[in-house]
Image 1 (cartoon, protein in one colour):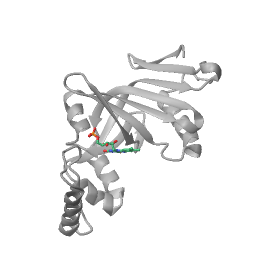
Image 2 (tube, rainbow, N blue to C red):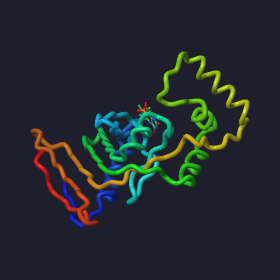
Image 3 (tube, rainbow, N blue to C red):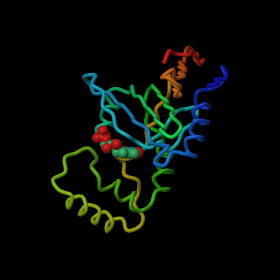
Image 4 (cartoon, rainbow, N blue to C red):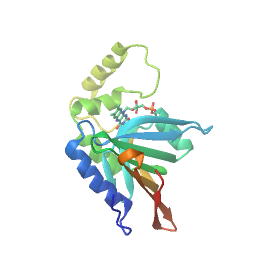
Amino acid sequence: MEINLNEHPVDLFSSWFEEAKKSEINDPQAMSFSSVSEDGCPSVRMVLLRNFDKRGFVFFTNYNSRKAKEIEINANGALCFHWKSIRRQVRVIGRVEKVSDNESDEYYFSRPLGSQIGAWASRQSEYLDSREKLIKKVKEYEKKFLDKPPRPPFWGGFRLVPKEMEFWSDGKFRLHDRFNFKLVEEAWEINRLYP
Ligand SMILES: Cc1cc2nc3c(=O)[nH]c(=O)nc-3n(C[C@H](O)[C@H](O)[C@H](O)COP(=O)(O)O)c2cc1C
């Protein structure tokens, strides 16, 4: 793996992501996101990358969910992409912040109507007695909003702002290539790591 030492890690991510999109079936934008509870216990789940640029990596979710509650208390988070078809992994570590209302609106209104209604109906991460209860809620919100639901105030995006990124590429005999990018006084320091 050749690394240009002046490269911004998000540019490198972008070129790997483009490659992954050519061969990864579902979904190249899937990434694990780890949050940390109040008592320091990590919890991890998959989310979908919806936007990224040099400011960070954006996903959308319910602001009352377990992950959102954990982010509120501890803004440290981590992401991990694994693209099996190209045998590569990217890790991102940083602070998580809410995106602007405009950014959340823009994405929310780009979604199919069913997903917009679904966001209203789901009290993500809460206990649910039965599937019927969820379906009933969907019907209620369909009736209430017809075809124009506003964005729920409890639904929107988070951006993980990277302070460290790692690129891993599979090598023969487990001699993988790894590069760590660490933000040190506003400059990215790059180091090769033992596999
Ligand atoms: C491939 C995949 C993509 C997912 N994408 C999202 C997503 O973008 N946003 C989201 O809220 N949940 C997504 N989920 C569901 C989450 O993994 C998780 O179940 C949900 O967000 C609740 O997590 P929490 O209770 O830890 O907050 C996805 C699940 C899978 C398997």
